[in-house]
Image (cartoon, rainbow, N blue to C red; front, top):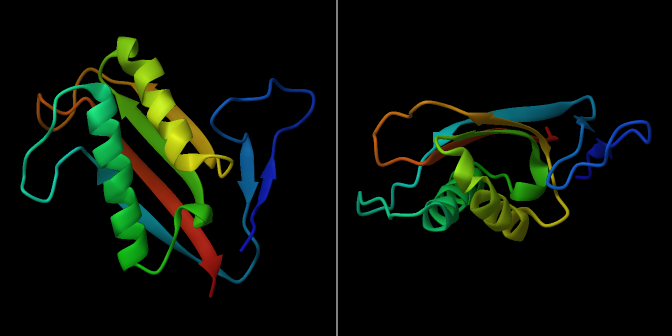
Length: 129
């Protein structure tokens, strides 16, 4: 399914997201809980790029197990603990998402559930029912 992704010409063109994503009527949606960089063995790697890799892999696993794909993600919210990690995070994000680019909110927060977590990402996906 192709959702209508919109960047109004009167606004700046964002790098890794669209300003809005329109979902067709009759779609079902799934809300993914925030994913952190916890590997299947319970460990968390150091560094923003390594953590971003795991976060996006975890999102793909949840989506796939639920019958969805990255292409069906219409909204994503990212929480980073360190503003200095933004570029490393954006680099990994761009590689995973390519041209898909869901609508997005990006937040810098004072902390997450565990001190070793550098980021958390949640999303919403939609597809034809």
